[in-house]
Length: 190
Picture: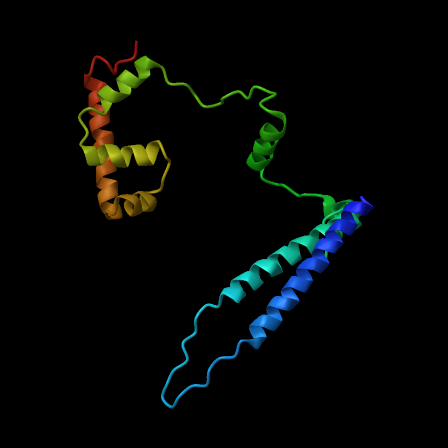
């Protein structure tokens, strides 16, 4: 490992020498004096791009050397294995985040039961029949209220109508459903 560190140090010294030579070359280039009324035009110098790349190489080499010497990531903070137990602890209170992490780490080891109620095909047919007499706007309001459980103000914001209109659509829709349930053969309970 020490041989590798020494090779990196040699490469770092070589890069620093190349950088110093390039800097002296850039400094030696003098700009011509400006004439009266002439504006200076700033052009990108090819040496500046090279200097930027050399600085990047030097930073990478220095970071690699520090990493190899320390045995962990060089940073102003302590390494994770040197921190106290309280600092290493990750506090997660969100149950959904914990569940996603567990599934990501361990796979779907346990079968989670789906607690959502299942709707049979017959119930779907009955609901479609009950809602068949409603207008499109009444259906939207009814579904937002009873399926998504939104408040009247949230429904009015989403559909961009007044709360009073939401109330009237909802009451008309509920009346139509009740009439359909009372009169339709599909909606009658068996």
